[in-house]
Length: 187
Image (cartoon, rainbow, N blue to C red; front, side, top):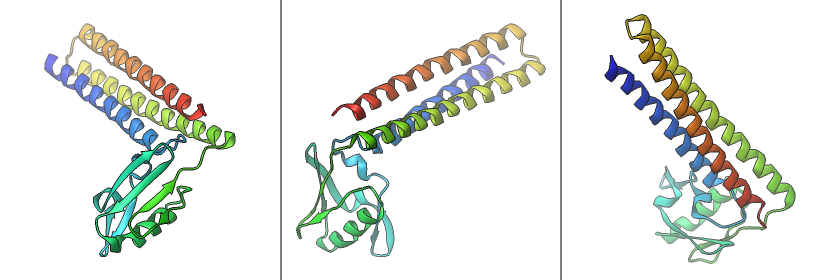
């Protein structure tokens, strides 16, 4: 029974860590005024009839804080990559110079910054919901185990550990969100 409790705690912590990782991944895609190769994550390009991630058909780098350079490994991929970037509605207008694509990241307006902060808060709330769901599932499992013979004091102690994990991961989310909001609002 004790090892089952520990297994539940490990699973809860793993789910909470996944929520944090997902949040960080989603926030890295949000544009905070500085160019980042992550802005193009999730972008797929038509590569000889197959949808292929952009980073698998080209090099993506940022020579300065306002520019992203996409250099395809095959020159014939310039046009499909350019189309994919335009169709992705990222607000970018790539410039094709025959060798690579240069994307100038426009400065953020105050209005756009506020919209981004709202998106950040929404992503943070999604992560909090995931963490609360993990807590609820763990507590339900512990209650089931108590009905099957787990001592009540062990169940209560495990519930307290689950709550401690929930509090800890909620604080991590708050820290991540605060840092991202400061990043966005900094001109």
